[in-house]
Length: 500
Ligand SMILES: C[S@@+](CC[C@H](N)C(=O)[O-])C[C@H]1O[C@@H](n2cnc3c(N)ncnc32)[C@H](O)[C@@H]1O
Image (cartoon, rainbow, N blue to C red; front, side):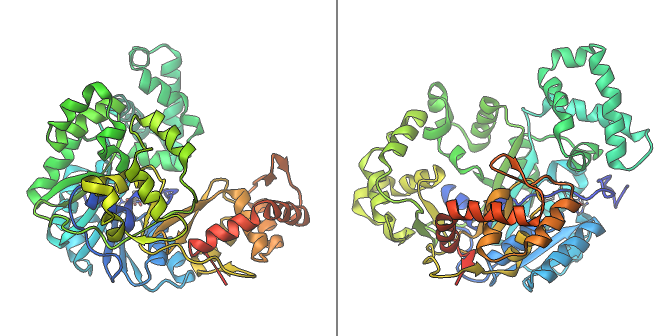
């Protein structure tokens, strides 16, 4: 279906997941890692998600940051309908969804932006729409604004690009909706592969990818593969497309990848340290054969970070984590047993501290920022918009309507589901068995849960055992709640998901 210069798939709903790397808290950390000051997230701010899908990411973020203003833009009317429906039922008044093409971004009532996200869309667009997005960001981004840009990347996708082009070409001539055409085209190409086509013999990555195609969600694949202009980009391509609009690469959103000490091969580290960011990123992409990049971009003249972001350092663990640090030291080659790491862990053992105060600790010395960034990248401490809350005493309840909806309505989802944590400023993922335990802890409706599971044709399992009927489901959930309930109540309470 062609839409204003794009051939983007619009007849099948995209099965979105939450985009954790595009959360404001994450972007602030990334900017700080890249030496820039992003907007404060302890005050009202603005955020736009371009290609917002069914709105899950934006609704979770709107729930996490009630004082901020969120905008989603998507061309697919069904995506926008579902997004608005979720926002309305969750009682979110700080999120607006715009049904529009990126070609019309300039006409939308979207304010100056502190943050923007483009997830799963940029490299799937034709060049003129990529340019429209960049132009919009160039005009609308605040001087210190930060953009999350995710794209299918080279070199890892070179063989996959060729395979996609083949699938697309065959699918274009077949009848049916995008999923049906995708499946029928794959059947043809499967026969090609079986017939020992040389392409598959000399391109092992394409061969391996095709070998696992049947295990993928065909709706997601229809979006991923059938978009006529989809073309993977290098870090250089993305930087070159951003530059005319005054935007430049600041950091990799996979924060640990900014730390060459942690992630670069020993033999290459000296070469990498001397290189400009784009060359460094492309070499590291070759090391890892990256097929998807997540860049954080800001204005080329964005202000330097003269102070750390107004965040908190906290942990859910206690003690010096000696064994964990030893294990991580072995894996990364960085001595995490060194005194500054211990000083940070000790400082936030049982109580949160402001990031600025942690950095001012004389035991951390000149490399204080890197010490904290490294511990955060390794998830030994967390940088948070607010400190972990006190756990609720007594009976607890789900604190937000969105989270209550996710618990009730996604009980049949086989994968983990995102719950909004206003403390972490991002999602917390709960797997199916934990969601059933949570449903028990908050006196949820197991008849309704069973009806949903049965309707979805899902076999509910607890500890490997299949469950039949609402009563058995409730009993299994109660057993799980007994085993993990106190720890879960404590953690979800500290994360602001359960309240008194
Ligand atoms: C693969 S989905 C990604 C959704 C979401 N960002 C995520 O990461 O789950 C890409 C989204 O971009 C939207 N889209 C594609 N072309 C567009 C265009 N020209 N203008 C606006 N939205 C577009 C699609 O409808 C779809 O919802």
